[in-house]
Image (tube, rainbow, N blue to C red; front, top):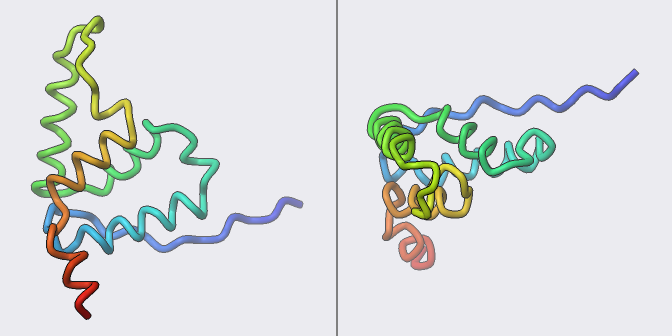
Length: 107
């Protein structure tokens, strides 16, 4: 009999509020760590994260989907949805609280 996978808690939806960014990403990282086999590609990681978007975050992601779908196949323009690193850089730039790290250091 195979060993059952451990249950991981549900991830709260991310609406785009800057104060939610750090806790949301902590939950995502725990999921990636606990189920690393399920997140073996950049696309799977991006799809998982975006499945937890609502509100402004969902609109932002939908806009990226739409704009990248319009790019010609031969385009050399980088696509956010093909690179986890590029996606995370854009996601963090758009939604993280730039003062979070400095406040954490001061505490």
